[in-house]
Length: 120
Length: 106
Image 1 (cartoon, one colour):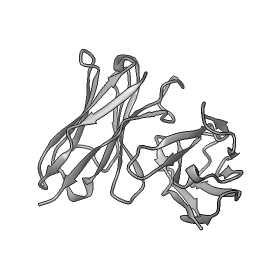
Image 2 (tube, rainbow over the protein chains, first blue to last red; image 1 turned 180 degrees about the horizontal axis):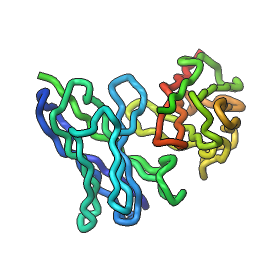
Image 3 (cartoon, rainbow over the protein chains, first blue to last red; image 1 turned 135 degrees about the horizontal axis):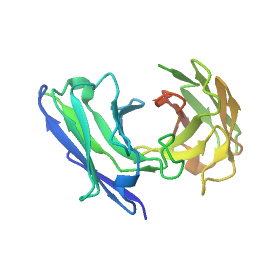
Image 4 (cartoon, helix red, strand yellow; image 1 turned 90 degrees about the horizontal axis):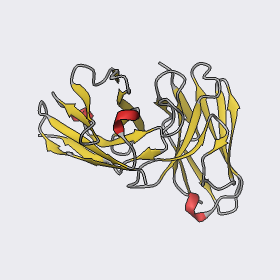
């Protein structure tokens, strides 16, 4: 059974850092494109960062230069290192995958999310 | 960037009603559109992809249509479990979600 479990969220001051983790089971992260999507309180969904199999990474303009996505195949885990955090980064962060389309199109498996709050 | 606009933002309906949600893209996205259902405190759940293909396990009362820039999600007979927020998402160029449509009890 495919499972994604996020962790690492919490309360952080503006300018601070956090590292989110997305532990996967039921499939190998080494063979899967993965994405981080966030949702600010009461708001819609926004893609944040993507890790492709070939190691290609992409970032939304809103986080480029501040966030870094990475993967540890031995731990079957995806990460999101978030630096220089701002109040507008406050959101629930989800990791998700597109299990069957062969690319990263729509997302059929999601984690439960981890909440990041940036506030002084 | 491709913008996705949903209407209405909120929809009040009763059990048994036929419900239609519209999603418009700022440019043509062919049929590269998905629909999700999200309940409070939960992750989104995939309902439909490629504009009209029902995800496995999703009830047949859900259907999707459209291509190019205009798409619809229809619930043929609203059930108590369907009161939720619905999002469209394009995957023609990167990924963009609509702002959501909340379906609430009338």
